[in-house]
Each structure stands twice: as structure tokens, then as C-alpha cells.
Image 1 (cartoon, rainbow over the protein chains, first blue to last red):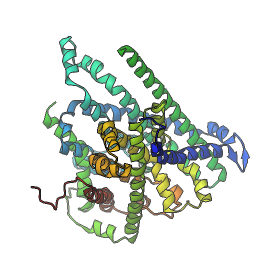
Image 2 (image 1 turned 90 degrees about the horizontal axis):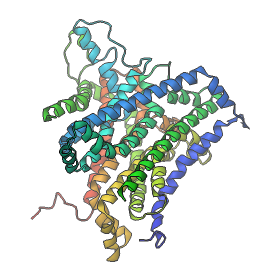
Image 3 (image 1 turned 90 degrees about the vertical axis):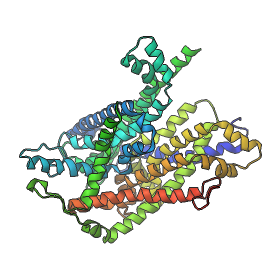
Image 4 (image 1 turned 180 degrees about the vertical axis):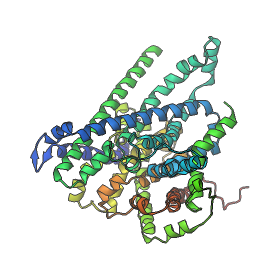
Length: 281
Length: 264
């Protein structure tokens, strides 16, 4: 079917209309980050780079988001790899995807219920005669935030990786075995090429979400250091009008960072795909 | 690895936390450290459900979630089909652009759209909130329906065309009945993501559109653990309610097994 032969490209119309929302939103955020009291200025960005509060939020956000994404991916991969035959049937899959039924902040509350200083674990710890239960939630190192994210994202990672494992033909494993390869070469030669594009995509989705979402750090974080999202949200609703442009500038820088990361991932994957196609011919 | 290992991991990691939430919601706030056991009660649900704000917020969340879901279905189905049917230059770029809205911080988009929403009169309205909830949901729906259409295969869509079916007839008799799993996934994902939005709902809704998250956060400061647990469980009722509705709508499709019809 030729693409111009009928009116069917109208099918793209709703998506194009939808794309106006994020594109306009981002463009407006960029334009407002360069404005203070109706004048065009770079001062929001200058202020940001001189603000210790902002710089420590950047470091903290990168650390928390990177650790959360990496741990989610690793645990999700291990889980899927070890158990995917069992995940073919209905009930086990439903159990694994249980956390996806709840919003992130509800899962965050569950982490508080179980792991805070007055939570279930701490109560049992005290009952058994222990004292000094470690601070795992609303802590300055972001442990509570990371725990919530990893716990909540592992099922998502499994959801993304499961189709990959379902499509790998068992003959490939036999081939590696016949050629004398062990478990590692099975993973490296058979699974990894299939996994890599999905892993990059999943990492980007989880990383972009964890570094920019407000709800979980608002619930499980402290006032210092804060995540960028919390800081920007507070600036947006801050008392001073100038703080708003700081919120915009911080969010624009974050968006730019994520887009660059995505671009690198995209180029890398396309290169791989290109090389694979060349190898085939 | 063994099946028992899997069961152990799955139960501890994913079922146990939900079980604890349910247990806390129907028992007095736990004080295990003083050797107290579990005392069952249902007051927490009484307190929660007697709060008029809760019912209002549930109504708004449900309305917003439903409209967001419907728009997601329209965009997802159309785009998923188009991406499957047509091959053109730069298709992988188009796919990447369609996924991009879940990578750009939705907080940035909501802040950026805020002034625009004020100008066109959508700020502080539930329709404005619906629009902003589309941003983190639509890319997933497109992805899910794209996969579903790809599995369906192009030939499945060319056949009705050659037989002279109209696109809508084709949608209801062939595509939708064959894509029920995708519709279910989109339903769950969309409603849960919509229910998860506090910050962007607050920005666009301006505190006037009170959805469930808008009262969950203030509750944290005042309510005890049993009530908070009950509230947490309440959140999972909405996806189930929506699921039942969608399942009912799917029964109306042709070529569906009707439970009230005795099969022969």
C-alpha cells in the first residue's frame, strides 16, 4: 500500500495533535526560562550555576536516579533470566506485576509502613532486643527513594524484557553448547544482542522518570539534599516571581540532559543495527 | 532455577507488601515492639469512606481517568495501525519522537503549559488535567497498540479492504476483537499512571481539581497507619473498576464469547 494513495495517513493526525502538547510545553518552558520580569535574560541560568542548593540537587538527583535505574535493570534482568519459563503462565505474571497496580507514591507509603523507624521491620527489630534501627526512609542519602523506585520498577523491567526472552529460539543455545560455549557465552552471544536495544530503551525510560518525578522524593526524601524535581516544584510555587524562572531553567537543563542521553542511545543502537544489517548481506 | 525459588522470590518481593497493606488496613495500627499482636478492625475504612472529600476525589479521578483512557485508545489505535501499515523513510525517527514525551520531564511540560492553559481557560479545569495526563500515558498506548497491530499482521488488514469493508467496520469486527489483551494492558497502565500524578495535577488543576492523590498527600500528616493503608488499597479499586467496565464493553464487540449465551 502506498502511503499517499489514500486518506489513511489521517491515522497519524491524532498523534500529531497530541505531540503539540509536549512540544509546546517544552518550548514554553524554554522561553520562560530566559525571561525575568518580561525581559530576555540569561540570569536564571547564571543564578542556577551559582546556587549551591541547585548544584547539590543535581548531584543527588543523578546519584539517586542512576542507582535506581541500574539496580532495577540488574535485578529485573536476573529475575527474568532465571524465571522466564514460569512467567509464561498467567498467575505468576499477575503476582510479579502486582506493584504496577499501585501509584508510585502508594508504593512509597508501603515502604514507609515496612521500613521507616516506626515501621514493621523496626518494631520487630526492637521486639527482638535490637536498638538503633537504621534510617532507611526520609534519609539524606536517598535510600528510601531508591528502595521505592527499584521495588516499583523491577516489574516494569520484567515486563519489558519478558518478550525478548520469549522470542529467543532455543536452537541458538544448542548452537553455543555444540561449539563448546558455557553459560556466559550463551548470555553474551545469544541473549545480549537481543537484550541490548530493549535494555537501553528501558534504562532511558526508568532513568528519565526517576530523575524527574516529584511524588516519591516528596514523600520519602528530606529537605537537604533534595531532588531536582522537588526543588523545581518548590521554586515554581515559591514566594518570589524570579524563582519561577529558576524552576523553568532547572527543568530545561534536565530535559536537555535527558534528550542528549536519549540521542546517544539512539545513535548507538542505530549503528549496531546498521552493522548487523551489513553483516547479514 | 527451581519453581519453588521463583515462588519464594515472587511472593516476598511482590505479594507480601500488598498483603501487609491489606492487613494493616483491617487492623489497629501495629505496635509489635511492645509485644502487641494484631487486632482486627474495620474502622479505618469507615473513617476513610465517611470522608465526603474521598468520594468527590474518587469521582474526579474516575472521570479524568476514563476520558484519558478514551483519548488514549483513539490515538493509540490510529497511530499503532499507521505505524504497522506504512513504511516510509525516517520511520524509526518517528517512532522515537512518539516515545519522547515519556522521556521529557512531565513536570517541565506542565510548568510550560501552565500559562497557555490560563490563556485558553483550561487552567483549574478537569479538561486541562485530562490534557496534561495524556502526556505520560499516550506514548505507552502507541507502543502497545503498535506491537498488537504488528502481531496481527498487515495481511489481516488488507483482506477486509479487498473485500470492501469500511475502516470502522474493520476496526470493530476484526481489529478490536483480536486485540483484547492490548486493550486490557492500555486500560490498566493508563488509569494507574493517571492516578499517580500529583505534581502536574496540582499545577494544571491549580488546587481546584481534587483528584485522589491531591488528598492522599495531606492525609499523610493527619491519618494513622490503618487509615493510610485503607486509602492505599482504595487506589487499587479504581483500576479494577475500570477493568470491569472495559471488559463489559469488550463483550459488546462481535465475535466475542458471551457468558450469557450457552455454547453448543
